[in-house]
Image (cartoon, rainbow, N blue to C red; front, side, top):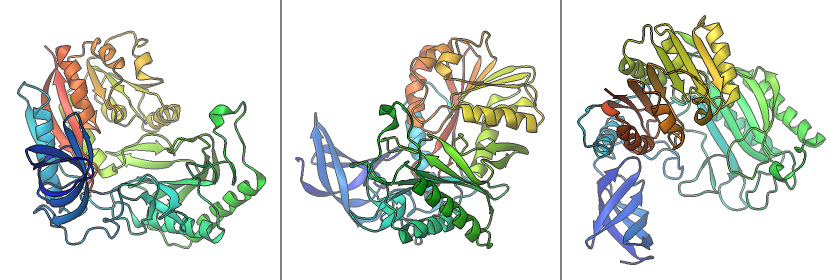
Length: 475
């Protein structure tokens, strides 16, 4: 077996989140995003140090898990939802088996595996989307949507996406048509020429309010990375006029009652960075207000364009209820909520705890957390803006309980030992990327902690991802 060979085989192993394996000629071939039980034709793409990787070309025979007869119409080309062709029951079954195996392989100690809790909604559940501008094929018509499966460049128009409310796709279609009519170009990653980058939409499950932000460069022409400039670049007059026309158009069209919800605010965000990410290098409010309000378990939370908030609001209630159950009685205890975002968990715990301290690096999120706590009448929450790695050195006392809800890459290797030095008797770790938790667990076990309980919470139906909540304790 060598690179470039075209072969076929059956996927007999499936590991969280998206690694599948074919046994062939006494060797194992890694296939990304294959489904357990599929028989596929594949090309060998890499052979190095005894490791083989392949890329699926065709499905010869479907897996028995593929029983959804009505997947999203974009499923075959869109790179967003790998499990659209599985019933939700089979999605949960697969995730349960994968996560259980992942956690069991991470420790040699016994713990209680409590399965995977389903999302209250498995369709139209997302409250935030970042759509990308581009084209469906080189030099093709302007497109606005998701990246094509297996491509870093091609974009698929997703006007009937099933994981968002139809309000998202209506605004997406209005925006695309507006710029297509005016023949406005998207930002080309290689030439650094172009204007349109992303469309960021957030929607409150509770109020139906919608926040829309158009992300562009500062110029129709060549764009210089602002990191190389002595002064940040500014928008030209023609660019400003166009953006205002777009905002007015979106406002007037959505005021006609075409949405299930309503527009809360329309904004423009400038991003001249060459990084292929939604970055905020200055945001201007064009209509309405620069936030929406979400409600979880009876508390209200202000959500700004770039503050962290769980993308599945109904699922977040389930997630935080599980975390609360794992924390147990917090009466009279001090709690550290590290990587606290807009302070959601901290505030949900505040009524039962003596004091809750939240630490978050995004200043915008901390400002929202402070405001949220005031609105919710909570005076025993303190939120600190800064990097957890640095802030933990300044807190000056030890908490009774620590909650960790880090970003996808897990906890910074230098921050984790500092956190463990607090010696909290109990830690609840909420992981949006369980493979990162598995890495952190080794360090936590070396410090004397033991995983007692673990449960999956499916915050991302129709995708390979799943959150995990873990309770750890030490003598």
